[in-house]
Length: 112
Image 1 (tube, rainbow, N blue to C red):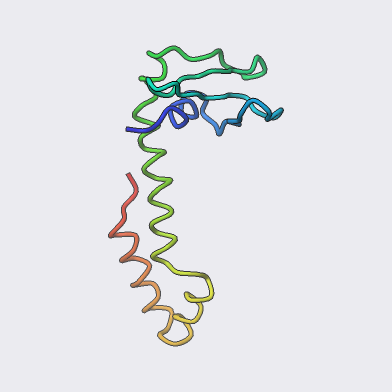
Image 2 (image 1 turned 90 degrees about the vertical axis):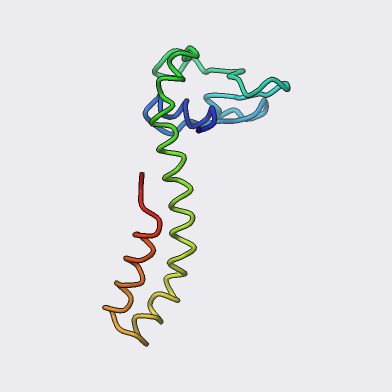
């Protein structure tokens, strides 16, 4: 299950600018007073009105997919190694061996 920020971005259909009190560029501010995260501030300039709990729950499937894909990218990036390591691998082992390694990373970590 994705967090509130992912649900908000799924609801908006784009990345949002989250911030704190002193951040003048924020669109949204989340808070947690011990009972879970909630929307404390929603800028008037946002193209959609502040979502209801029902609207956020409707965005949960997409939010979970976005959350999983974000973390999958981090796992894949680490498994691929740096660009320098990949180029070194190609130089020493050839492009076909590199392709096999990349395919294995992708197969071991499929997108949802």
